[in-house]
Length: 364
Image 1: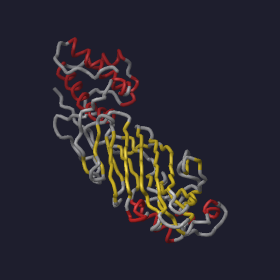
Image 2: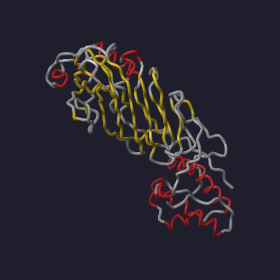
Image 3: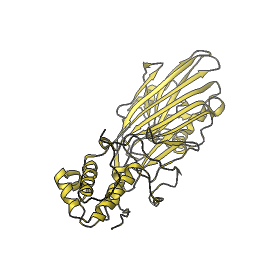
Image 4: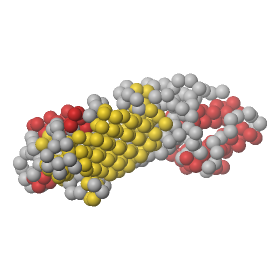
């Protein structure tokens, strides 16, 4: 039997999604949104996050739905004004895909961004500190790690509660790591009254099965829920001193890493193109012990139940590693076609060889 070993040279999908951030009150830009939005004005704008002692962030709900190709984000914030009537410029900072490069484009880093105020569509402007900011604006962007700020003027009556919701999607790019990271800047939420968030609920949902490798989260108390494939976090009167950072390894990627050490094994492109007959032929050319090793390794990766602790040499040190658990919802239909064909073929070959082996996941 040939023991499958992970390869250290592999390309994985990394969400080049802009890092998002909690809403913050911004000073220096109120009443100057026309200057912020202008592409012709050469005046620098001192638009910086500032503490607000009257408006409290009473509730935050953050939902991020992640696939190997994209992420969809919904961030909803509920504020209560405990002071006199006032109009604030509320900023939603993001880290653009250009990440502060000097040739950053003038346009918005989020192509499908929308913002609503109490359920109604709101107007916004985009501020790029590197291009339009004063030294103070650039320093603030560096401190919190953002490249752009989406600005909305919000009028608060005395005692009024208002809800702002941001929605957008992001894409993905290739980097040489074996895990997929997702980031969201939370520290800016400390700028509201009392420096705390009254109630916060975060859920990062992963669409595909995950492997028992590089599962981790930066927030103490954040948990992995295998039944919903989600990172979940809830707290009350919470002071945001850390940003959200979660990592996971897509099972299909990790399966390909494991198979990468096998002799006479197809490339990723060839695996994707395999037909049912070709998958069967590929496995029939191997010994029963080899096929069983491949099959059990696939099940181990797909169910996220490692027989022994996995290597973390490629994982991020920025997160607290979570214990992987079996995926109770795993179905063959959840798998990428090439992986599904290979699993079904291996099951058929082992049955033909009369080799005892675990049952594959249910079809539906």
